[in-house]
Image (tube, rainbow, N blue to C red; front, side, top):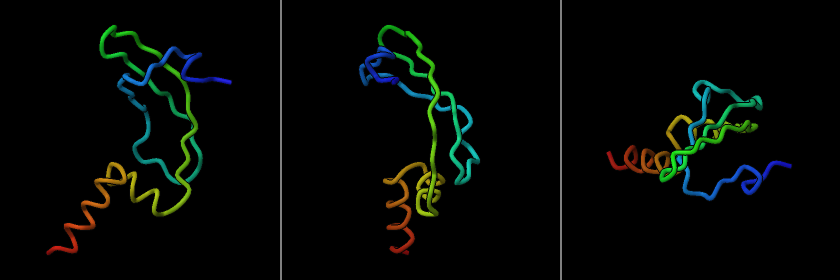
Length: 78
């Protein structure tokens, strides 16, 4: 029942996810802090993080899909 509207988020916030480092494949509940760039208001909420496949783990370790693809391209170019 929690939505962006109920949390008062507008999409411009900077999100920090605490405890994401070292997560394996099991679903985990982590705390997210959303800080509005203009007002400085802070909203904290919990999320369920799921990393279900080896490919998703690789994306996470690389810092996202784009860094993963770039690393793969660079490895193939050498």
